Length: 541
Ligand code: LFR
Image (tube, rainbow, N blue to C red; front, side):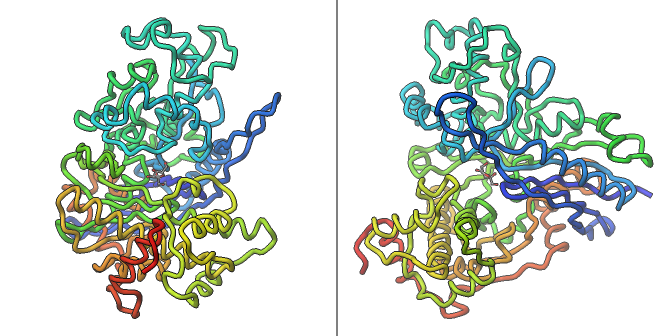
């Protein structure tokens, strides 16, 4: 019989998972059944310098992730006997650098590290933001891959050792934006032929020996042309980055390669000759959007996890000045679609607040924190949850207090008040963002679908419906893993059709829950309008 089980490796900022999706049912009635085979922690590690008093660097523990992936795949093989494929997705923008021989040169740095701060001051002088957006259509975030590359000493060495790069980026003519060249590698040393691989591409290359840049994640680098979906040689040159720094692009839904024999042996693959690795939407948000069971032509979505990605699926990018000014991003989706969305700071603020309470000796369970929040007056204190101070790890209650004071509102002091402030402020940001993307794309949003772990948070789902004033349809929770499996299964020939067809499979495979505005007597439109004013420091009404 045909093997119908696909392993999705889905890496999030707090945990990694290996989830097997089995395709069941015949043509027109297929379903995908997910089984979580392995879950492992993803804990960034601060690495100190060996000399001087420079800052510590926040890095990803890639060896731990790799071990978790291999162990998880081995368990998947043991449990399901055979696998029809593997696909990898993770958060975006972060990368590893490999040398000429493909060896990893340094621990990948976490996007929440502050290393790009000095670069950001210069990069927009060199390449003005409107020029960047006209080509890449990308939101400005301090962690965009291009900015990280300009802050990366290994890349600086590579740039210095590249004699000319089409003229425009010749180091003598244009001093690099980066000032990170202090590493002291002479030109031509290992960094000379270094290549940058986004994390899922790096892991895929470890599995198969094939180096590619998957398109959806490549669109978060700042170096992809949003219209042509090819690397922008123009932006690479203007940033002073060598044009051969990045591998060739590959679309989602292709065969990347077969798992190498040495690794296959470690996975216990005795019962099959080869294990294919398929390209998927390797940006987790791209895979999650595949699994959004969009129910109307004007439906919006929220991919609700560490981040909340709030937006629309569009056929073409929106590259207008108004769109740039609103910092809406045009990221590449599966099947040529555009993920037109805003990054809302997300459940990170909640999980980091709870981590903070635990670290100061006041641990609190999520369920208890949510119960305490329920008892607090709605919209008591609302902040701009996207404030840049909330990006790095640290004291979330303290930072929320600063924002509350700055906007003349009561300071959230106990756990209930802090969590209430976070949930209300998230819902408020969903409202703001859905309106913004709808207006800029010319769509009147009539329903909002939520996928990702956040769908388990019924308090947040009801608040979102109240704030948005339209129904919120919650599910599936494992959006990224399901989207990952769907694209693999189609590539392998077990499913067919367009994204709309794949989304019918999602509907058949999941129980969706609808939250109706006002169903539990929550705040109405006027109260949310007032909250919006207060969050931005306007006088309370
Ligand atoms: C969500 C996500 C977002 C991206 C952020 C950083 O997990 O991938 O889409 O902006 O993480 O990579």
